[in-house]
Length: 279
Length: 273
Image (cartoon, rainbow over all chains, first blue to last red):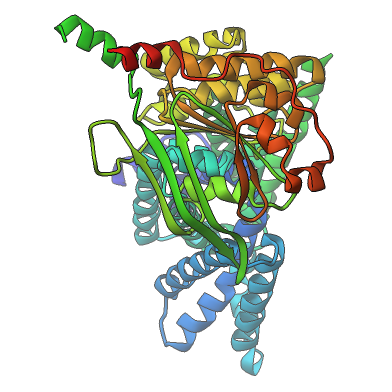
């Protein structure tokens, strides 16, 4: 960590003098490729709405953690999101309602519950930082937390990626190859929930889904194989993350939303490149 | 048996003769509703069994039960010759289609690699998985599709790729769920010919769901009419002249068989020994 700060401080930029910027940069370098890699599969499985729902539902987790008297409700938030991911997966498996309906109902309920509990006595404004996120206030402890979660994610991505791919293509086909499909579906939902929840305080509920989906959506327009797709998504994620952080410093804007705007810019460019390649 | 014979035998995965898939009293309920019940069926290896039935008769559900995907009552057991206890079969499955959007950067060789190798495909595709894919695709003259995106394949190409995948590794049972749905009519006969050859080449049990009854009957060793349970089964000509089948599909004349019915050459030979 000290080495990182020393190295970045050598850069001849204004922002590199501030410890909070160097911390934020480190966090973005760790977390943005993870969000992008997760996004590559979220887009394939058409689960963008699910990741968005988990983000919104963290409001309930925040409320429960706060009511329990915790200064940092993160542990409760993660537990709550995992539970929710499990419940939605179970409802997809055994319920007859469409997945969209199931997710919409649970998301609205959890978000409403969170808002009602947090807004008692008119105190919601102090929680609005969760809505737009604040990566500049990230602490050393939170960076370690980001590292642990990223390592966990990469472990899942190394061991289970192929099975996740087969399950995403066709359940029966995956089953014929002895893959426990619902175990894999649950694992994917839970890891998504953990990543989304951990990133909420830094990125914000309103734009988390965009940071997951945009790099992958951009990479799809350029890649010709799964391998290219994942590497392109990770690169686009990290570049728009860093560019967004620096731009937000000079523009004095919210970092999460600035990163999204830059990622959206890349997406627009990829559409042009794709159209040009097709001609 | 000399060692070289044993080697050749292993190569051919000769499960010939007595292997058999037995469905006994198979039933599936979904959301409190009975989808199929009391399904009894014996399927022998080297045979092509065509499963017919009206829409909603439970054909796909029966496959899902055989795959262990749908919880079911009754027993699905696979027996190999010389082993009295049921064994777990290798199953090849060809779905009607795949769930991905056609723009996904997912190639044919990615599909084979995901199914065949342990290391994640984003780290690279193993030589073995690539060689397997090439060999399997070659059987169906589809080698040139290796680098194509799955979404760019035509219906017939997709079915050939999925069939090649289902045969890697060579399964004991091959399940085909309406494999010709996406193929243009001129290719259907050719596709059935390929399936028909497989049964002799690899000596596997093949069960195929088909709506194209008359064409499928030309290649079937046996047919089974499923309408929530097995209503009748037997030789294609007999099944097509069964009252329940006529009620559902009308009078279908049994076409001339495309191959002589009976055991394959290998079985006949082993029977003589």
